[in-house]
Image (cartoon, rainbow, N blue to C red; front, side, top):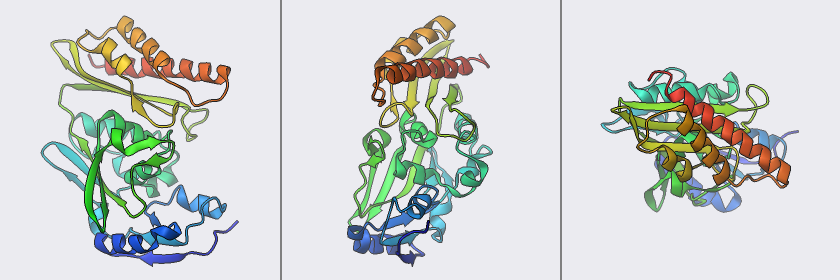
Length: 287
């Protein structure tokens, strides 16, 4: 199939983009960056925006910037930028591991980090990273700029706190301390398929004790989220398989799977138990 007719707007500045978006958002005007979800949806007539605002020729949006305490990711930075560490330390290594679970190479060459957040798919690896690391998400409209933490930004399945006239311009991820340990685990039926369950965990290890524990789970509920119940099991503990197993059990009990049937929900809980345990086990490979 082919998309329905639309008007194409090529812009060169953020201000130009938000001015046009303000004019066309009432007609389902959309921002076009990577387009790896939007364009196929248009081709199948599942999305019929009357206007596309192409931001790919705005130079400032294609930049990765390392600040004193965070990594700033512009709206047009591609997934493929993270194939190699983009910043020294644990954060760069973490992003380089996670990115290889995203779809297939051609999609990673075109899709964008911020576009994944704006799309807010529950099975998005970058949404899980943003929630787990407490990313700061920056938006812009003709009314000005505002920022939200990831926990405030994601409202549910493919739903965010962005207004129709706002565009996501950048995302900040905190730089992780050198003593940070992390683990990522994802289960999908085939390589490149959407995740069925995934987990990202991190903590600082001081004197062999875990502090600042974060346990995030995605692809099992309407949106990725941290699991305080599992974090509480691990905080101030010495890393060990026994406490990891207890945290995985707590995670499995804490989630509310979106599947309709009892068997499907139980299957998801077992998947969560597995991915949380495996992610935690990966954190101690270097301990």
